[in-house]
Length: 408
Image 1 (cartoon, rainbow, N blue to C red):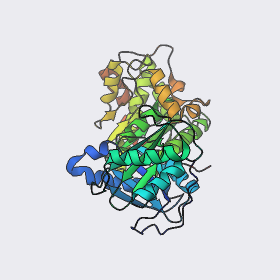
Image 2 (cartoon, rainbow, N blue to C red):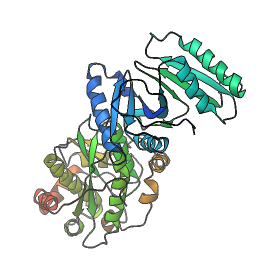
Image 3 (cartoon, one colour):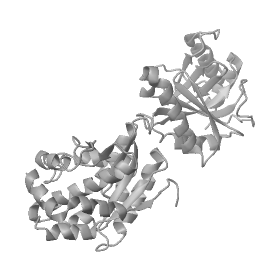
Image 4 (cartoon, rainbow, N blue to C red):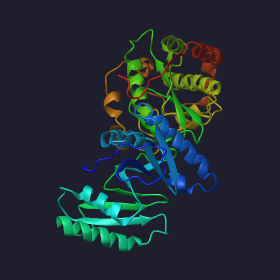
């Protein structure tokens, strides 16, 4: 932690201010978007402002592939909170708590010395000039600042794999000095790829599928099928907790809950037998499609992974696709369970998914699952059920919740 004190400054002031803490954001593939880049950057800036709104009102300044996030009366603890929150915003690969200093060698040296105060080990200085009018080249600035640190503290210079890297970036109006950073979520800004609906089971897979689609710029809502009135509310609590955790990646998430128990009872009474699970999932997809159309969604998202369980065969996946006209996105289709669990752990949904609950899917599970479902047989079952009318009734029974990240 730096000991450099930051004075209170007006956030909209554009002249250089020595020692103002701020957040410096490095963008990922957004910078490769050519003529559409400005649209991506505007959406990303809006997402950053929305994410940190409960913490502070900020200005987001766009410059040459980086964002500068400034706030009124900035101090180290506040900026550190902003850095941690911004690291979950899709579209950013690195977040640094930096010092915004005057665009002169003396100010840069002073900030670099403050960053290195009390720190042991080897170091290197890495400079980047976005403004080539600065009188020193990057190499010259590295040598001058590095020499000054070595003279004052005696830390050895090590250009390859140093213990500490002091980074300097020379911008249009000011310089930024920082060391270290927090990895960002990467991907594309949420909202740039449209809207989709996630079928959220409460298990391990569907939250990871939702995360991976948000990372590709899709804004998602969630549809959960509860076994009520024949099961308790535990699966709803789990779904709510999962959506609340995932909400940190986009904000404004909506969870739609369908009481599905009576529909399951009808499927069981229809003579579906080994096809009951596939018939149930086709009904879920039809219900999801109707809801997605109402909220102007363009795709359904599931946590299917090919061959992960006995029912997730290519034939069964094809039978599911036949149930709806809307595209079904399966971002986990080629992943194995270990990979999915590792990602669930990294996004902090695994421990929630592992909580016990009564999953509605187990209510219809036959002793032997059908692995090669025939579409014609499923259509006959659906004709007996009047499945279109049933899906309409299920949509009308939906309850909406708005889990917010950070709420207790």
